[in-house]
Image (cartoon, rainbow, N blue to C red):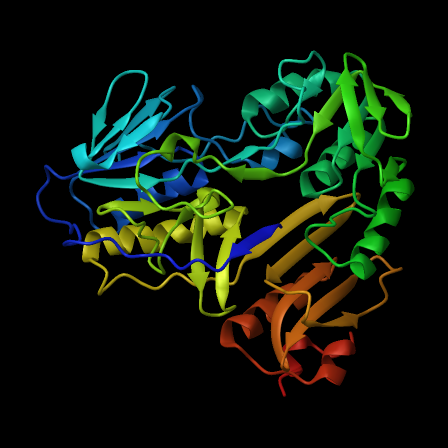
Length: 422
């Protein structure tokens, strides 16, 4: 659910925008995750008649990522391939082709197979996990981002091994949940003083820390990793944790290294800077999904949203602008949405909050179902719902409307959120 922000504004490309037009025009989509696949599909749905080429770095058919930390990891599913008939949509799908560079002046991207020319380029290369220094190629140290990662980890869970998860963020909690369900002995180490420190305030995250113990997982906070070695994690306080497997989940950053030197504008967080129609600073180049940040008029800042719903919604704006031009393309300013399944709880979040926003409890966090709302000048801007999906659905609609709400009614869990409008 992490939403990183900065205040740099996107710049629109110069020159004429491409339109549907002649069939010879070629859109190249770099990246075959959710954002890339949905962009290709949306282009056809919007009426693009030209060539569409989808470049995927992995050898596998494009797949959905959320099941990797759940059904695929636990052996309940062999994969999570998208149900898209690329051939019938006349989408050229090229797998095992990683983009390595962009030469905008030539309208080409570089790949190990040679350059690929484009009339329009959509950057959808997603995010890559942050690695612990010294963990590269170390036996027994794993990430959980790709299908291959989940496939490698699955036998370890089946063997009910001792596992250590580094990082108590969303991915760490989901992995710990799956590992405990499989019968593993689980220790989670977190450098901060609480889980989800980068996403939620201490007063909220403190209640989620109890979920680990209740599930049988051991959570160590304020625990910094000093070194990794085969079969063990060494902490800064001298503690040595033995492990058959170590899973590192300390965050992700935009996979944009291949754009260095291309002239495209990148933010300090390495995201591609786009305008409100997801156009980049280069002509005929768009960016969407986990690798792109966009200006939000709703929240008054630039957002980088590393979540599934953003990768699903953004492609609609990109496709409409490519096909119909910026005058017809919709402005992209969504209400961010995220969900997580952990320790027997369904956690949902909608919106975006800042430290200065007023936090309102809705229900008792010591129970199985509760909600937190954030208000800004009386307007609902974010909702975190644990086991209360109706709160999330109604709250999301209120956020979309920019609705002012009555604080007392918001705080009463017996009052439907939709009835809390001031």
